[in-house]
Length: 532
Image 1 (cartoon, rainbow, N blue to C red):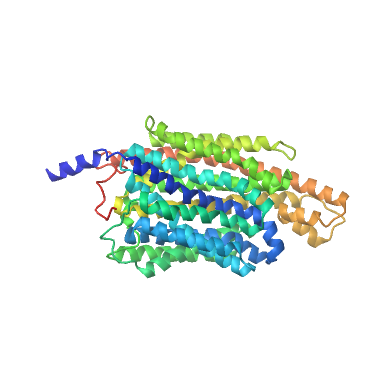
Image 2 (image 1 turned 90 degrees about the vertical axis):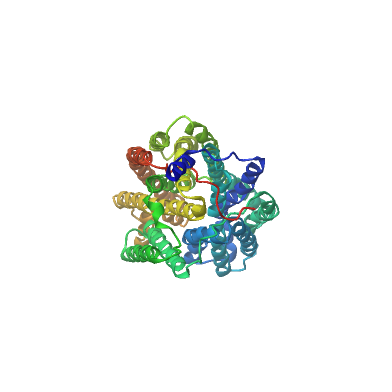
C-alpha cells in the first residue's frame, strides 16, 4: 500500500506558488541579467582598457577569458555548496563578492589587477546561476508554473545580453572603461536588501560535509577541458590542447570513481541514471554546441566585414535578445499543449532555418539579413534552453536541486566551449585554405602570413599599408571570410537538423521509459530541508 501511495504522491500536482514566490522570481532574475551583461560589456571596453592599461596580447586574452574559465570551473562546487549551506545564503555571499570584485575591477590600475578581479568575478558569478535555478526548483512545485518560471529565468539572461551592449556603449561614451563594471553594484545591493525578505531558504539537512578533494578535481577537470577547447578555437588543433583535454578527461574519471566511494559525494551520479535527466543534458550540450558558434561568427562579420563599430554592432544584436526573451516566455504556454520532445525538435528545425538565412550574406549585405537569421535562430533555440533546463532540474529531487542546476549550467559552458572550438576551427581552417590560394604580391612574407591566419590579422596589417594596398587586402580577406562564414553556417544547418532528430528520439524514449514508474520530470514532495 505504501508503494502505491508513493506513486500517487509522485503524480500529484504540487502546490501553487503564491504572490511572494512570483515577486521572488523577479529578484532572482536580477543577478541572471547581470551575469550575461558582464559577459558583453567587457568586449566594448577592450579598446579603451587596452590603451590605458597596455596589457600584452597574452594578458588581454586572460582579461577576456578568465571570467568564463572561473565560472565554468566553479559551478559544480558552488551548486553542491548551496545544497549544504543554503541556496539563499550562497546567493547572498556571491552577491557581496560580485559587488566588491566589480568595484575592484572598475578601478584596476594594471593588467594583472584586472585579471585577478575578473577571476574573482567569475567565482562569484558561479554562485548566481545554480543558486537562482535551484531556488526556482524549490519555490515552484507545480509543473506548469515551474516551466514558466524557468522561461523567465532563461529570458533574464537574454535580456541582459541585449541590454549590455546598449548600456555599456552609453557608459563608455560618457565615462572611463571601468564604469561598465560599476553597473553591478546597485543591482547587488538591491538583491541583498530584497533577497532575505522575499526568497525562502532551502538546504539539504543530510547533505554531509563538502569533500574538498572532489571539489578540486571537478574544478581541475572542467578548467582543463575548456582551456584545451579554447586553445583549439584560437590556434587550431595542436598537441598542447590535446594534452589539456586528455588531462581533464582523466581527472573527470578519477572524480567519478571517487564519487562512487564517498558516503557524501559532491555529485550524486545516480542522477545520470534518470532517462529524462541524461537525455535532456545531452540535447542541451548539442544545442549549445551549434548555437554558441554562430554568435562568434556574427560578431566578426558585423565588425570586421561590414565595418560596424562595437556599439552599432551591439545595437544590431538587440533584436536577437528581444526574440529570445519573447520566445522563452512563450514556450511554457506551448508546453501545456505539445510534448517537450516535439517542441525541442521543432525548435532545432527553426534554428536550421535561421542558419540557412545566414548562408545568404555577402560582403555588402545589409546587417538586417544576418540579424533576421539570428532572430529566427533564437526563436528556435528558446524551447531547447527552457525545456531541457526544466527537464534536468525537474528530474532531480529538491534536496539535490543545487547539484542538478550546477550540472545544467556546466553543460551550457561545455556545449558553448565545444561549439566555439570546433566550429571556430572549421571557419578558421576554411579561411586559411582560401587565403592560401590568393596571390598577394608586394607585401613582406610575415605580413602575408598574418593576414592569412585570421581576418583580424588582415585588418591589423591593412592599417599599416598604403590605401590602395590596404583596400586590395581587405577586399580579398573580407570576401574569403564571408565565404568561410557561409560554409560554416551551411554545416550548422545540417547539424541543427540532425540534432532535431536526435532530440526527438532521445527525449521521446526518455518519456516512454518514465511512464512505467514514477515520472522522471514530476515534482517531489516538499523538501525536508530548512525553509524560511
